[in-house]
Image (cartoon, rainbow, N blue to C red; front, side):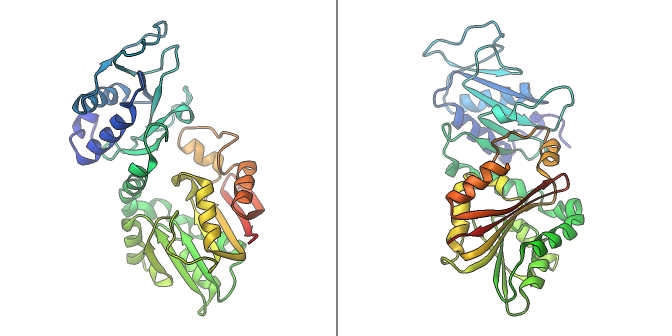
Length: 332
């Protein structure tokens, strides 16, 4: 297990992350602050090297709280630790786990990098003003889940009854077409198969081949056709799906409106959409060392509004400590 970024910084995974972050911050910001609960100084040092590799003139801090903001035309300043009095042009937050006596600033960050597995860093967020998501997002989502696919069921295998209960609550029609978008290792596939019966059809779709491979080796894929696919570009003609089931997907897909519109495109009028997670939003946020914000996509009011814009009507909403479940009906 690596103890410092220096132990692993030469790996292709680290090189990709540092290159993407350096590209994002090099276009114009003058003050870049790297913060988090650990590794801020090391990350700032390695980011500085990546900036130099890309020909970006920069200065490594520190910039003290009383320091004035750099003047126009000054070199980019990279600071490790809590940011100065003047708000930084870019805050990079390193997600390493919660610390009880210090609040997370992740929700304020323009760049978020997950370092919980130091050997396998993954970018969770880059503000679109810095870097177009098309150049980084899908690759980073695949990287996140590919590294976890082999142990996913070991860690979360006791969730199967919760998945079955959510499918039962959704009201999947016998003989219908049900799709599990972001199916992962296929935990919902057996329940969906039981619901549609022998005359129905189940599709499991995921962006990460390693997760689908586990679905096949576990035997869950025998309950469905599993396909490698992007949730925002489903390989289906319009208005053919009876039920869309999506567990834990929204947090990994940028642009909730686009996702809900794509779900609406493939769903029949009167069809159903179930958004599910076997952990409630507050407990999940606490697991990541953050607190909930009122305007997050899965909060009830923003979700209701986003669904309506995409042609859905929110029928049921539950955000208990031990699960999240929202059911919507396609208005056609």
